[in-house]
Length: 272
View: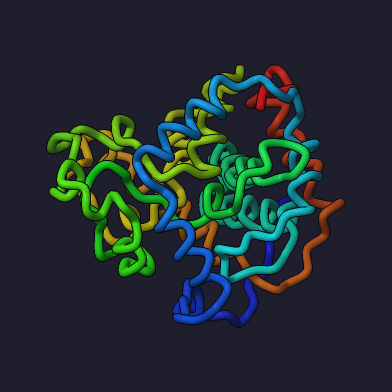
Protein backbone atom coordinates (compact mmCIF):
# COMPACT_ATOMS: atom_id res chain seq x y z
CA UNK A 1 0.00 0.00 0.00
CA UNK A 2 1.36 3.42 -0.96
CA UNK A 3 1.56 6.18 1.66
CA UNK A 4 2.01 9.31 -0.41
CA UNK A 5 2.58 12.72 1.19
CA UNK A 6 -0.30 15.13 0.76
CA UNK A 7 0.81 18.51 -0.52
CA UNK A 8 0.24 21.58 1.62
CA UNK A 9 -0.91 24.97 0.30
CA UNK A 10 2.54 26.30 -0.67
CA UNK A 11 2.66 27.56 -4.25
CA UNK A 12 5.51 26.85 -6.66
CA UNK A 13 6.27 30.56 -6.77
CA UNK A 14 7.05 30.55 -3.04
CA UNK A 15 10.12 28.30 -3.43
CA UNK A 16 13.74 29.38 -3.91
CA UNK A 17 13.07 33.00 -2.95
CA UNK A 18 16.48 34.51 -2.25
CA UNK A 19 16.72 37.82 -0.39
CA UNK A 20 19.73 40.12 -0.37
CA UNK A 21 20.56 40.31 3.32
CA UNK A 22 19.85 36.97 4.96
CA UNK A 23 21.62 33.82 6.11
CA UNK A 24 21.24 32.20 2.68
CA UNK A 25 22.81 35.23 0.96
CA UNK A 26 25.73 35.15 3.39
CA UNK A 27 26.15 31.44 2.68
CA UNK A 28 26.32 32.01 -1.10
CA UNK A 29 28.78 34.86 -0.68
CA UNK A 30 31.18 32.48 1.07
CA UNK A 31 30.44 29.76 -1.47
CA UNK A 32 31.08 31.94 -4.52
CA UNK A 33 34.25 33.46 -3.08
CA UNK A 34 35.88 30.21 -2.00
CA UNK A 35 34.90 27.67 -4.66
CA UNK A 36 37.86 28.28 -6.94
CA UNK A 37 39.25 25.84 -9.49
CA UNK A 38 42.31 25.19 -7.33
CA UNK A 39 40.19 24.69 -4.21
CA UNK A 40 38.07 22.05 -5.94
CA UNK A 41 41.18 20.20 -7.14
CA UNK A 42 42.62 20.37 -3.63
CA UNK A 43 39.48 19.06 -1.90
CA UNK A 44 39.16 16.21 -4.40
CA UNK A 45 42.69 15.13 -3.49
CA UNK A 46 41.81 15.26 0.22
CA UNK A 47 38.45 13.45 0.05
CA UNK A 48 39.21 10.81 -2.58
CA UNK A 49 39.92 7.92 -2.62
CA UNK A 50 37.14 6.93 -0.23
CA UNK A 51 37.24 4.47 2.63
CA UNK A 52 37.96 6.42 5.80
CA UNK A 53 34.58 5.35 7.19
CA UNK A 54 32.42 2.30 6.56
CA UNK A 55 28.76 3.06 7.29
CA UNK A 56 25.33 1.93 6.20
CA UNK A 57 22.87 4.30 4.57
CA UNK A 58 20.76 4.48 7.71
CA UNK A 59 23.77 5.19 9.89
CA UNK A 60 24.53 8.15 7.63
CA UNK A 61 20.93 9.38 7.70
CA UNK A 62 20.90 9.32 11.51
CA UNK A 63 24.04 11.50 11.54
CA UNK A 64 22.50 13.85 8.98
CA UNK A 65 19.63 14.63 11.34
CA UNK A 66 22.16 16.67 13.32
CA UNK A 67 22.76 18.99 10.34
CA UNK A 68 20.69 21.97 9.11
CA UNK A 69 21.34 23.06 5.52
CA UNK A 70 22.04 26.82 5.63
CA UNK A 71 21.69 27.15 1.83
CA UNK A 72 18.05 26.04 1.75
CA UNK A 73 15.37 28.69 2.33
CA UNK A 74 12.50 26.21 1.89
CA UNK A 75 12.72 23.75 4.78
CA UNK A 76 13.82 23.35 8.39
CA UNK A 77 12.86 19.67 8.56
CA UNK A 78 15.34 16.96 9.52
CA UNK A 79 17.22 15.20 6.75
CA UNK A 80 15.29 11.98 7.45
CA UNK A 81 12.01 13.79 6.90
CA UNK A 82 13.27 15.47 3.71
CA UNK A 83 14.59 12.12 2.44
CA UNK A 84 11.13 10.60 2.90
CA UNK A 85 9.40 13.65 1.42
CA UNK A 86 11.54 13.49 -1.71
CA UNK A 87 11.23 9.72 -1.96
CA UNK A 88 7.46 9.86 -1.67
CA UNK A 89 7.20 12.67 -4.22
CA UNK A 90 9.24 10.55 -6.65
CA UNK A 91 7.01 7.59 -5.84
CA UNK A 92 3.91 9.60 -6.65
CA UNK A 93 5.38 10.97 -9.89
CA UNK A 94 6.58 7.61 -11.24
CA UNK A 95 5.04 4.76 -9.22
CA UNK A 96 6.44 2.12 -11.57
CA UNK A 97 10.11 3.19 -11.19
CA UNK A 98 11.19 2.15 -7.71
CA UNK A 99 14.82 3.15 -8.45
CA UNK A 100 13.52 6.73 -8.82
CA UNK A 101 11.90 6.52 -5.37
CA UNK A 102 15.17 5.34 -3.83
CA UNK A 103 17.09 8.10 -5.63
CA UNK A 104 14.83 10.62 -3.93
CA UNK A 105 15.38 8.99 -0.57
CA UNK A 106 19.20 8.93 -0.71
CA UNK A 107 20.03 11.95 -2.89
CA UNK A 108 21.26 14.18 -0.05
CA UNK A 109 23.37 11.63 1.85
CA UNK A 110 26.53 13.39 0.69
CA UNK A 111 25.77 16.23 3.11
CA UNK A 112 27.50 14.02 5.68
CA UNK A 113 30.64 15.84 4.48
CA UNK A 114 29.86 18.60 6.94
CA UNK A 115 29.40 16.39 10.03
CA UNK A 116 32.00 17.14 12.74
CA UNK A 117 32.71 13.43 13.26
CA UNK A 118 33.50 12.96 9.57
CA UNK A 119 35.10 15.37 7.08
CA UNK A 120 33.80 18.43 8.98
CA UNK A 121 33.82 20.60 5.86
CA UNK A 122 32.24 24.07 5.97
CA UNK A 123 28.77 24.25 4.51
CA UNK A 124 29.91 26.48 1.64
CA UNK A 125 31.88 23.43 0.45
CA UNK A 126 29.09 20.87 0.83
CA UNK A 127 25.64 22.29 0.03
CA UNK A 128 23.96 24.83 -2.22
CA UNK A 129 23.68 25.11 -6.01
CA UNK A 130 26.67 23.82 -7.96
CA UNK A 131 28.35 25.30 -11.05
CA UNK A 132 31.39 24.59 -13.25
CA UNK A 133 34.76 25.98 -12.22
CA UNK A 134 37.50 26.69 -14.75
CA UNK A 135 35.27 28.72 -17.07
CA UNK A 136 33.19 31.90 -17.02
CA UNK A 137 30.40 32.04 -14.43
CA UNK A 138 26.83 32.25 -15.67
CA UNK A 139 24.48 35.09 -14.75
CA UNK A 140 21.86 32.38 -14.31
CA UNK A 141 23.54 31.19 -11.12
CA UNK A 142 22.00 32.33 -7.84
CA UNK A 143 23.62 35.55 -6.50
CA UNK A 144 25.91 35.89 -9.56
CA UNK A 145 27.43 39.21 -8.43
CA UNK A 146 29.29 37.43 -5.63
CA UNK A 147 31.47 35.70 -8.24
CA UNK A 148 33.22 39.03 -8.73
CA UNK A 149 34.84 38.40 -5.34
CA UNK A 150 36.31 35.08 -6.52
CA UNK A 151 39.91 35.35 -7.83
CA UNK A 152 39.05 33.02 -10.73
CA UNK A 153 36.75 35.73 -12.08
CA UNK A 154 39.86 37.71 -13.09
CA UNK A 155 41.93 34.77 -14.34
CA UNK A 156 42.32 34.98 -18.12
CA UNK A 157 42.35 31.15 -18.43
CA UNK A 158 38.85 30.93 -16.99
CA UNK A 159 37.13 34.05 -18.40
CA UNK A 160 35.77 32.63 -21.66
CA UNK A 161 32.58 30.58 -21.88
CA UNK A 162 34.48 27.34 -22.37
CA UNK A 163 37.49 28.29 -20.24
CA UNK A 164 39.82 25.28 -19.95
CA UNK A 165 37.24 23.00 -21.57
CA UNK A 166 35.88 22.55 -25.10
CA UNK A 167 32.43 22.79 -26.65
CA UNK A 168 30.15 19.83 -25.88
CA UNK A 169 32.73 18.19 -23.64
CA UNK A 170 30.00 16.85 -21.35
CA UNK A 171 29.47 17.63 -17.67
CA UNK A 172 31.09 14.32 -16.70
CA UNK A 173 34.34 15.92 -17.90
CA UNK A 174 33.82 19.31 -16.23
CA UNK A 175 35.06 20.10 -12.72
CA UNK A 176 32.09 21.30 -10.68
CA UNK A 177 32.12 23.36 -7.50
CA UNK A 178 32.54 20.80 -4.74
CA UNK A 179 29.60 19.53 -2.74
CA UNK A 180 27.46 16.64 -1.62
CA UNK A 181 26.36 15.72 -5.16
CA UNK A 182 29.82 14.69 -6.36
CA UNK A 183 30.68 13.07 -3.04
CA UNK A 184 27.66 10.76 -3.00
CA UNK A 185 28.09 10.01 -6.71
CA UNK A 186 31.63 8.79 -6.03
CA UNK A 187 30.47 6.78 -3.00
CA UNK A 188 27.86 5.02 -5.14
CA UNK A 189 30.27 4.47 -8.05
CA UNK A 190 32.66 2.89 -5.57
CA UNK A 191 29.97 0.59 -4.16
CA UNK A 192 28.11 -2.47 -5.40
CA UNK A 193 24.88 -0.53 -5.96
CA UNK A 194 22.95 -1.43 -9.10
CA UNK A 195 21.07 1.83 -9.56
CA UNK A 196 20.71 2.77 -13.25
CA UNK A 197 22.66 5.48 -15.09
CA UNK A 198 19.71 7.87 -14.76
CA UNK A 199 19.87 7.64 -10.96
CA UNK A 200 23.61 8.29 -10.83
CA UNK A 201 23.25 11.32 -13.12
CA UNK A 202 20.49 12.72 -10.90
CA UNK A 203 22.63 12.19 -7.80
CA UNK A 204 25.63 13.91 -9.40
CA UNK A 205 23.86 16.95 -10.82
CA UNK A 206 20.67 17.55 -8.82
CA UNK A 207 22.15 20.74 -7.30
CA UNK A 208 23.26 22.02 -10.72
CA UNK A 209 20.26 24.37 -10.94
CA UNK A 210 21.75 26.68 -13.58
CA UNK A 211 21.69 23.71 -15.98
CA UNK A 212 18.45 21.91 -15.22
CA UNK A 213 16.44 25.06 -14.51
CA UNK A 214 17.88 27.55 -17.01
CA UNK A 215 20.01 25.49 -19.45
CA UNK A 216 23.05 27.56 -18.47
CA UNK A 217 26.41 26.15 -19.58
CA UNK A 218 24.62 24.32 -22.41
CA UNK A 219 27.68 24.90 -24.61
CA UNK A 220 29.48 22.34 -22.42
CA UNK A 221 26.67 19.77 -22.48
CA UNK A 222 27.00 16.68 -24.65
CA UNK A 223 24.40 14.33 -26.09
CA UNK A 224 24.18 12.32 -22.88
CA UNK A 225 23.51 15.46 -20.81
CA UNK A 226 20.63 16.46 -23.09
CA UNK A 227 19.27 12.92 -23.00
CA UNK A 228 19.23 12.81 -19.20
CA UNK A 229 18.10 16.41 -18.62
CA UNK A 230 14.37 15.45 -18.56
CA UNK A 231 15.04 13.00 -15.72
CA UNK A 232 16.93 15.68 -13.82
CA UNK A 233 14.07 18.13 -14.28
CA UNK A 234 11.46 15.62 -13.16
CA UNK A 235 13.51 14.84 -10.10
CA UNK A 236 14.04 18.52 -9.34
CA UNK A 237 10.29 19.05 -9.10
CA UNK A 238 9.95 16.10 -6.72
CA UNK A 239 12.85 17.31 -4.59
CA UNK A 240 11.98 21.00 -4.40
CA UNK A 241 8.19 20.87 -4.16
CA UNK A 242 8.17 18.08 -1.57
CA UNK A 243 9.52 20.51 1.05
CA UNK A 244 6.20 21.03 2.80
CA UNK A 245 5.05 21.31 6.40
CA UNK A 246 2.68 18.33 6.30
CA UNK A 247 3.52 15.78 8.99
CA UNK A 248 4.56 12.33 7.79
CA UNK A 249 4.66 8.98 9.55
CA UNK A 250 8.33 8.06 9.49
CA UNK A 251 7.84 4.61 11.01
CA UNK A 252 5.18 3.79 8.44
CA UNK A 253 7.28 4.80 5.44
CA UNK A 254 10.77 3.61 6.32
CA UNK A 255 10.20 -0.14 5.70
CA UNK A 256 9.50 0.54 2.01
CA UNK A 257 12.86 2.28 1.56
CA UNK A 258 14.69 -0.36 3.60
CA UNK A 259 13.37 -2.87 1.08
CA UNK A 260 14.63 -0.79 -1.84
CA UNK A 261 18.06 -0.47 -0.26
CA UNK A 262 18.28 -4.25 0.02
CA UNK A 263 17.25 -4.56 -3.63
CA UNK A 264 19.70 -2.03 -5.08
CA UNK A 265 22.59 -2.38 -2.60
CA UNK A 266 23.84 -5.98 -2.42
CA UNK A 267 26.33 -4.84 0.22
CA UNK A 268 24.74 -2.70 2.94
CA UNK A 269 27.97 -1.08 4.17
CA UNK A 270 29.42 1.68 1.97
CA UNK A 271 32.82 3.38 2.03
CA UNK A 272 32.71 7.10 2.80
